[in-house]
Length: 250
Image (cartoon, rainbow, N blue to C red; front, side, top):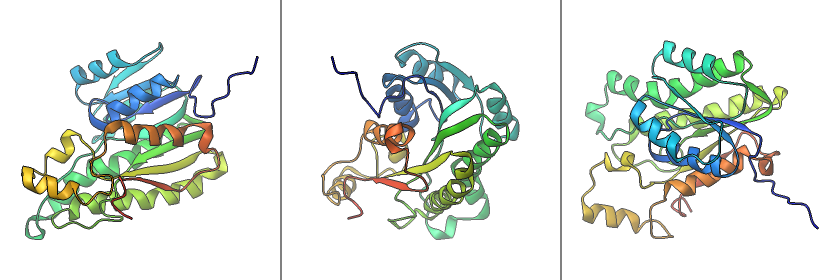
C-alpha cells in the first residue's frame, strides 16, 4: 500500500498566530490546526481568543492573552511560547484618512500595531531562540501600499509597505539559521477590518467590479496561502510576498 504523502501537512509542527481573536488570524489558526499543527493563539480579547481556541481541531493548543503594542506584552508572549516551527504575524488595523488629517499621532497609532509590533515580536522570538532551525515566518501585509495606492489609505498602506520591505531584510539575515521569512499580501478580504472604511453598498459593488474574479477574498483564501508558506511545500521560498488578491493587481 502506498504511504501517505502530503508536503502541505503541518503534523508535528507548533505554530504561533498573533491577532488570532478575529479575522484572518482566527481563520489561519483554525486552518493550521486542521492541517495537524499545534497552535499558540494570542490576542488582546480573552473572550474572543477562547472562542478561537474552542474552534481548533486536535489537541495541545494554547492561548496567551497579550497586548502586542506594549513591550511588556510582547516580552510576556515570547517567554510563554514553546520552541516554534512557524510564526504568523497577523495582528493589524486599518485607517482611512485624507492627507490633511494624517498627522504624526495617527501614523504612530497604526505603525505601532501594523509594523513595530510584528517586527519586535520576531526580534525577540529569534533573540530568545524560540524559532527553531528550519522554521518559517509569515507576515500578513497587503497589496495596499505595495501595488495599490488608493486615496485616503496612506497611513495603512505605508505601514504595510514597510512590513513588506522588512520581509526581505529579515529573510536575508535569518537564512543563515535556515529560517524562512515571507509575507502574504491580500486584496480586500471579508473581515471587520474592511468594514471600517464604511463604503456604501454602491461604492462596494463598484470596488468589487475591479476584481477579475468579481468577489472579495474570504479569510480562508489567505489562510491557505499562509499554510503553504509554513509547510515543507515551500521549503525553497523565502523573502517573497505572495499576492492573493483575486487578480486585482494584474
